Image (cartoon, rainbow, N blue to C red; front, side, top):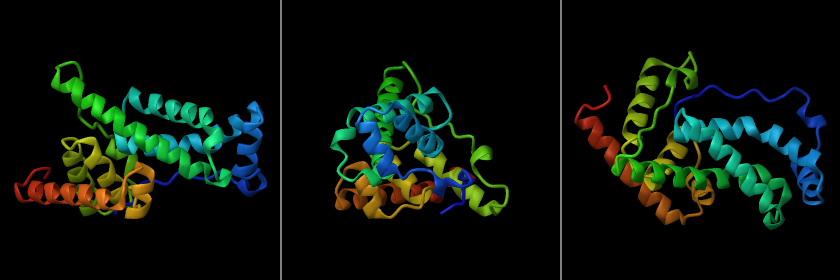
Length: 198
């Protein structure tokens, strides 16, 4: 896994209400609680979307859509303290839809399917050059993969998530996630053997 720049947490965050309290208040119609949830999670969600989608207008749109979907379905959230993980799952599934839409539009000549990541903005300056090169190769390959293979690969290799967490976020079975990551790893090996991304 390559180390990316971390997002600093606000100092004194422990003094703020827990997600569960904010979720319960937002369910009761407290707009301030909903706003506090957005402020608390927007930066991390934006970073995740950026690393999965690339640098363009889709990032802002998918983050906004994730929050809108979360607040519309807040009553279905069984564990209010799990808001962050639940929100991330919503975002991951929306990212998959955006990638599939991009690929379809590109096939029709109406858009682009490429993943355009500003790696200089994401990779910490202290990352060894070999790791930075590996990340460039990974994103070079990811831009050509279908969404259902690209997303789990990036969640594992870039976000450092385990297979169980990836399956939960994607709403897929563990066997499906394992199969998709194996496909991506095989493509990555083949790409490396062909000398692509050097």
